[in-house]
Image (tube, rainbow, N blue to C red; front, side, top):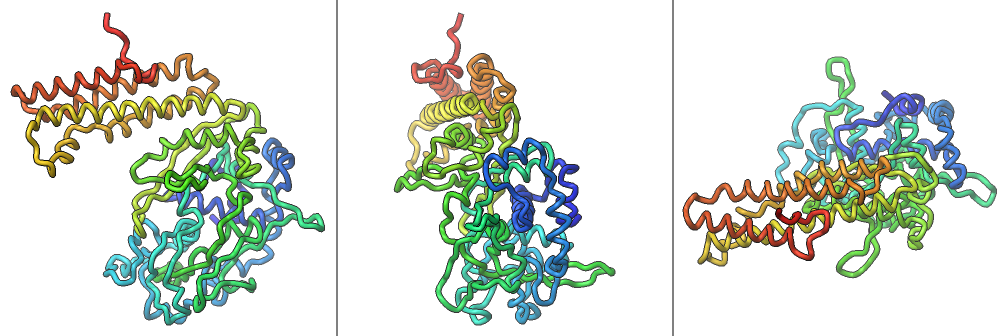
Length: 499
């Protein structure tokens, strides 16, 4: 199905479904760029609210502007292939690699000095899959050295920057249909001095006639987007796809990928969804980042805090959360997506869905804050219990062995894995109008307390049934009981007194 068909039928589709959460976000971003470029977007918060509440049709954007420029939408156009840099064409025959390089999760490190055997696989890729993977690279592509040579177009060609969304969590407000989701996330356009919408330039390709495209022979030069259409269609990579006929069907068998355009630090108007937090090291306010060591649902309190304090946040001005607060008695889901990586290698996609009801921000924030505090305390309690078990089981350990011995009894990973479903159930119950302190948090605390005991018990099963093993088990369970009955234990987690 084509992009225009998606817009025409946006009210009939529940949502975009891609191979990864990042791909779904990248396609949504591109659809938004088309709407902006077509001039089909609200101009202020009042009009945005009207569009959302009356379900303003999106078909006008699909029936006029895109179809009048058919050759601009050709993925394999000889001079301006959609989303690509045709200047790489002279190097394709000798240096093109397999289509796996296009997929963030398969490419691994881009470093050209490693033996990337898997990237030379001749397995072709369907063009629609390649197109979506290309959009994902533009938005989320990781930094590092590209498999490109500096004598092609210049020494800067090999140095890829991290994509616009690759360094932060992207939050998308979702509704019951794709059309609702698009309208919810269409930030109002500014007006030019003549009263026209300042939508910006759509990036069809590297050679679409736009002036000021960066070169790769001089120093790195970044630029500011000229409007939302430019922002959401930004060419964060130089990419070129090679078509080939396979059994009468066009496929992609070779890819070249290198550095693309660079963005200046974005102003608040281009960070509509960003959840801002102060960094621990220097206190700078930056968008929330995904973490390899911390599941994304554990950051939901920050998302709800952004919604609860949106109008008070003077660092960002009006944003997505301010507008959502206007939609009384209407539930939306906030979907957070981030790419977790180690240096230039993708580790995993992180995503989470958080229910949000305008007017209930404080209740949702209270539940998220208290729920996370309960889990954090339980996790620390498991640590102290694991220390007690280790010290009893290994009374004279070698210093180098202590960490490994502690890991044997430390059940924190199982706690976080098991707590996620309980947390989402808690937030769903509160989003239905229930007061968090009148049942939901009490039930959640009981579930986490039972889970904490269960995961510790499972870890202690490996202890031998001798005196030392029994003593280690007793010490760990006693330490946990002390923590769960102590004065600092959260009220909803605390063990009730024994009869």
